[in-house]
Length: 223
Image (cartoon, rainbow, N blue to C red):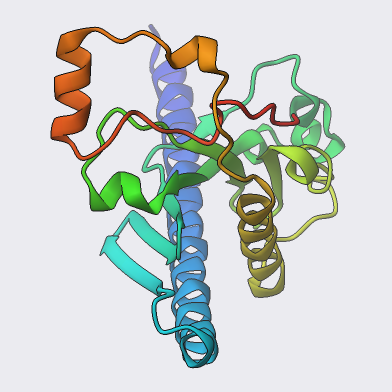
């Protein structure tokens, strides 16, 4: 490899590394904004709802730099920021975006994930319970973003050319996530799916204060 090739390689490493660091910092900033939004919602909603029913809990928990929870009674939103930066496959529509074609560094994104778990899954340590990934927020270095996910998240936020992530949009995404959880009730599973159980499974599940539970049992979610 010639010295010219080495210089080109070093320049490429510097450009990509610098871009990924900028994306990481920007994603972390938006995740901190999400934490602030959830903390404010917990405070404002809790004061109103507890006046109606003191047993209903609205709680925000900042678990660490990259994780937080928002509990609203029987449901909990779990938000996680991935520490790595991602690119989409060549055939993905993002890679065909004019801004990415002009500047390939705009094809890299940080990622924030929003999960829905039953609150009792945490309360009773039901490790076999499953959560549902509601949405994945992808944001680039300039805060252009897209969202992949369930129902409205599959089509509302896919104009990466024009969409800019900000406080207003983040609040809207959180409120839509809460609404999705409220609309998706825990359904009784078909009897045929649960009419037999192995002794070991029965003892294990009852030792964790309940049977394996997920909202997807008996519920056909829309994509």
